[in-house]
Length: 296
Length: 230
Image 1: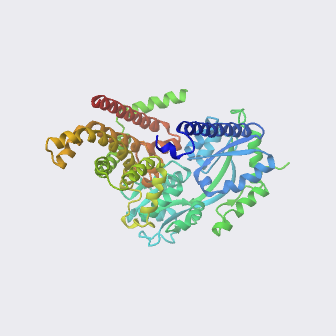
Image 2: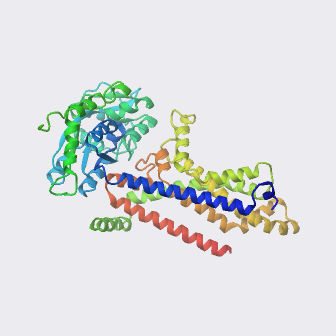
């Protein structure tokens, strides 16, 4: 053991010290984990909210929820998934409320007795973005369907979400209006969130349908520009739906209603109106929820 | 529970009926990961041979570096590749991002430290056994290398299979650089992630079963090979 002669400790002592240090680290990690879990448990009531990735990606909830949590001394857990899974989670009673933007499915969700009521609290709009050289000459087109027609006719690449999200549903609705079942090498199904879809469009110099909010939030990293906007069909309303009180007695209906009251109230609507103006120079969403709930 | 059973049922019928979408996804997964392991081995095998048979300055540094690279999270590799090949990156002109090649590159890089680390140890072990005998029988350097490779065949293939198993199961990195594009870069793991997001569990379960089967087969082959080697 020549090496150990250089060290002040013998090999055996080195081993013991290493083992003791290791045990200390492990027990520290274990104990702090247990303490963290214990500290998080109980005390504050928790509300679980499931929402689509587009809402989460915009960062709006990070501005909207903390004041609510502070006011009501509660914690809101946000689960960001696709619209399909958001609704599925809600149907299985795993959450307390949902925020989505797919009016047709929302109505079905309420009609079938899963949701209590739809509260439309804000909107933004869809736009068609594409490369600046605009090979399909869609720029300035007033109607979304006309623009899509031009994209088809020139076989310009179009990136679809392809994930059954609210945005994807809207896109399919537009294709139906055009009267075309999109397929072929020019039509690419990204199968990802809005941001990934925009990035793919950026890489492929292609067109895509996006909600304005996500586009504005990521404009800096994209060489895409808004080509078509203002179509009446592009209206994109967001709603919050609490789970039905009768069907899901375990869901926190009262707290959900408090959240809805807050979001549609003056304070919440103000946050929505101003969100994004500082960072992006324009708002990402437009509030339209005030007066939805009769105040006591 | 009912929910899981009906989903499982539908998933099995999807597999049995050789559903076209599933088939193309599985095929792409295999071709991407096999190509990645192939390119990785073109690099890994000579490097492992060099590490095992030659003594040179910096050798132990390379060995240590390879061992630590095995622990690098795959998403970190994905991030670096993404930054390199995106349009605004230094290799952007090649237009590789969101193509199968991007996935192959990322997976090859992920597999390389694993394959080198396993092959190098194998080759070193077999090298010490074969070297003396081969040289005393008058073999040239190349003949000796070929003899070592022949002798170490099964554990070497075992190492490649380990690399393959690692990369075919990789999700986050593959999604980052591949983009999960339907019919182009959608592989088993990214499809499972997407279908679960959509709330369509049938396809996800079907692909999960196939992935599990792959893992079983890989493990079985590995065990057989280890049996044969010892």
